Length: 280
Image (tube, rainbow, N blue to C red; front, side, top):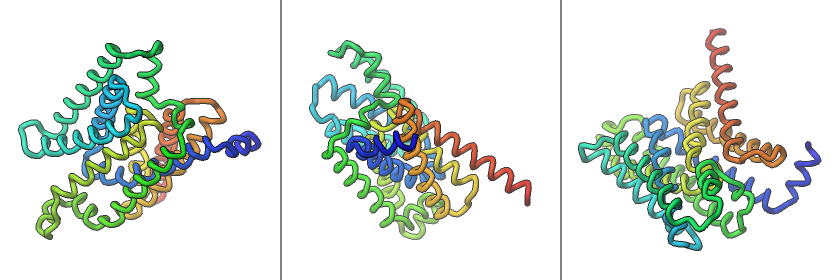
């Protein structure tokens, strides 16, 4: 197995997949902690369905670079979800459910009506659950992912203390002069960017797992925001690397394999936490 891995690691497409996988996993874990603590977990699921619908529209329009269409649409819907949940009678969870189901249904309908592919079910399955496209990335796509990922990390580090305050107590943050609505908007936009980047890695239906599981695993053992964030980042990157390598060797779907490794890590951390509690 080690010899097989060494052979595969010599190929540029495997190196590109590992780089992109690590970057996406890192970004997802950083914002995942904030989403879980703010009880915004389902916004990732809702926006992933929006991205699926946008990708279907981009396919119908025969756009050569669908990212230029999918990214703005997903970001716009993130803003609408946030505004709708705060200022209308349609609260956050209902708004997410409506947009999520609507985008998913319309996306599949458009793909069915206007598809020029002879394998519609295969295209839909690849988009929903991830595909081997992560192993066919070009150098320009890797650079784009790297630039956006670095931007996400820089934003998180620059506004770490403000995000911390907004995450735990919005009323206190407002009293301290922090523009809570602006930072909530920043969180939603960053999550939208991460989701679009992660679609090629795990598919639109599995993106939430990439965001939630590392954060939930870290919370089994740690209590402080900084410790949870660091543990979540390390765990997410490790699971992504292991999942990609296993999928290459075992020829399993990349996205599902990464999520399976995340689930095993969560079970392991839960077991360790339970053992630690009994010893106390």
